[in-house]
Length: 299
Image 1 (spheres, rainbow, N blue to C red):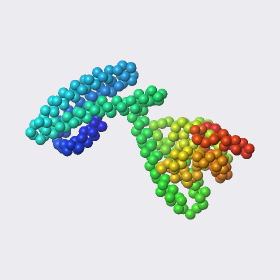
Image 2 (cartoon, helix red, strand yellow; image 1 turned 120 degrees about the vertical axis):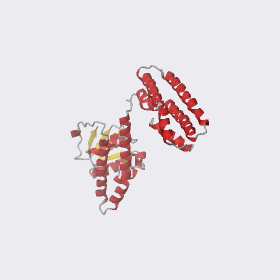
Image 3 (cartoon, rainbow, N blue to C red; image 1 turned 135 degrees about the vertical axis):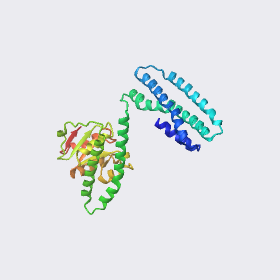
Image 4 (tube, rainbow, N blue to C red; image 1 turned 180 degrees about the vertical axis):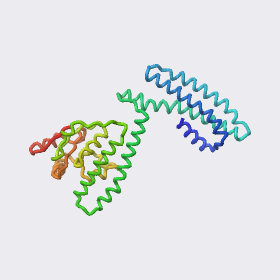
């Protein structure tokens, strides 16, 4: 109904149809049919989803008959000479048409997108709370990334050695990653076997990479973690500048350069996080370290 009203107001503005008190009262009763339309369509979609009983077409046929009755019954008032009656007819026809289109097109599309398609792909349906929190968390992440630009500018201008400034940025990145993870208050967090991760000595940590949150989790664990980044991460307009300033390992540089950069970072006390899906010759990097003492941690 919210989408319907927005659509109706937009159409009214397009055709320069003004709202007045009489319009609002009468058309509100007429648009109450939109509640019934949405309930019928939802019931049909749920029956098809839960019981594999497709009676949606029957509901749609009833909705079309109801909509046509209102359009014809109020549409004839469009020819009235009184401007108030004329506008009521115009708004009623536009409103019912918008509600009809939303019930037949938008509502089934949303249901298919957030429920049926996800079930087909082996995922759980997305609830409204999950959708809202996802939008909130991504918005928080984007705003935080954009905030890094002025912060990074101030840090870069600060009169201190580059290594110290990079450590400060790494510390901020680690805390920001933790805040992004905990911004999803609707998700319960549990950590296991953290005692097996030893950051006292530089390590090569190999982790799975099943979602974007894996990066946030690994960065929040310790401020002295450097990630091997792909090309799109290295050049991202959101966080690419921070990635390059801190000195993340660029996987596209090739194995030899990667090994040199990894050794340099480990000499500074950093642990290197390599995801299994990274486009890099992982085995060649590991073999290069076999001849030297190093710690290999696997998550």
